[in-house]
Amino acid sequence: MKWRMRPDVHALAGAYALDALPADEQQRFERHLASCEACAEEVRGLAETAALLGEAAARTPPERLRGRVLEEAGRTRQPAPAPPRPAPPRPRWWQGGGGLVLAACLVVVLVLAGTAVVQQRRIAELERTEREMAAVLTAPDADTDSASPAPGVTVTVVSSRERGALVFSAHGLDRLEGEDYQLWLSDPGGGMRSAGVLAVGPDATAAPLLARDLGDAEGVAVTVEPAGGSDQPTGDPMMSMPLEG
Image (tube, rainbow, N blue to C red; front, side, top):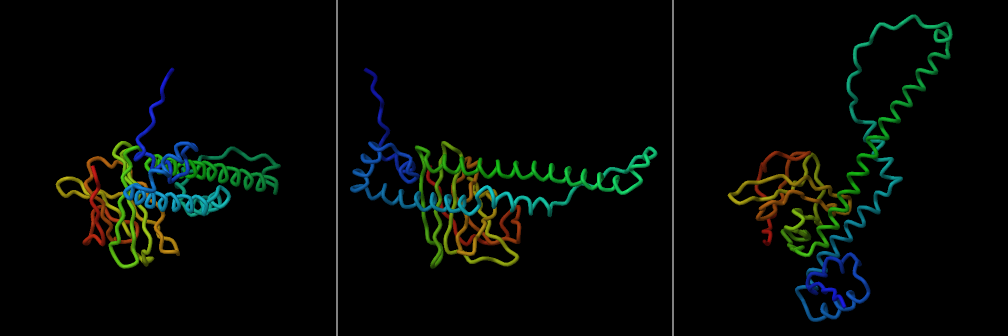
């Protein structure tokens, strides 16, 4: 008879928060949860981040996402056209209205084809990011830390050295005009690496941000930077938090 090794009950927190455990393991973990405050606190943080991830996905279903991507693609500056080549003599039918209609149709087809490619690439990137976030939340070594750097503000960081990434989320952030909140990874020796700019919604919630290339980072920090972010912090962090491991 082959025996299947059961995972350490403490390592089930991430899967439990995502409702990804089979029934027997769920019951086993819930019995453990009743007497383990550390796991209970970790589940609360993971569940909060998972809920934010789910809300972000629900706010941008494929139909709405398609509209947003099409709008952004329409604002994207297109490369300048190549210098025109001498055209051969046009046939008589081209000199009439039919030639103009055909040219307009060709332009529309080319624009739609290019827009569709951009749209599919952006959708694929969003889906890949969501999968990577879920992998961090359910990693066996996932570590959850929460803090309240200011009244009414809470931040949660879920990191995994095994996955080499972390997920950052926050509540209670004021929306900024002409400025952005930027997340940084602090490396040994004091170096700072940008992990991206936070997208804060009307509800003062920052959408979960995936920071890849965790490396040997010892902590995270958030600063207020000019719109679009900076290469290096331009001011003191509004919050910082050490990372375990």
